[in-house]
Image (cartoon, rainbow, N blue to C red):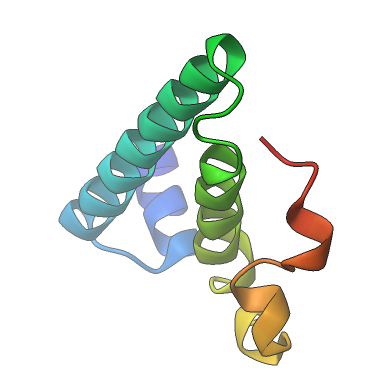
Length: 88
């Protein structure tokens, strides 16, 4: 129980807030994995969607939690369009 309480304190969330966020992240990861799987067999589909989903999760999980997301330029927050061409 100490490990659970410590983690919840670190992320400053209640148990149910953490549950909601973690489930949302896992469902987004599953969707991103499905997009990448479709893209593997049909390269003309889901060309960028998997990467966009992962970038969005990174912004929510890492940058926003550390307060860094608000310091990014608008083109970096939504994904750099010029640098996103090689992503799945």
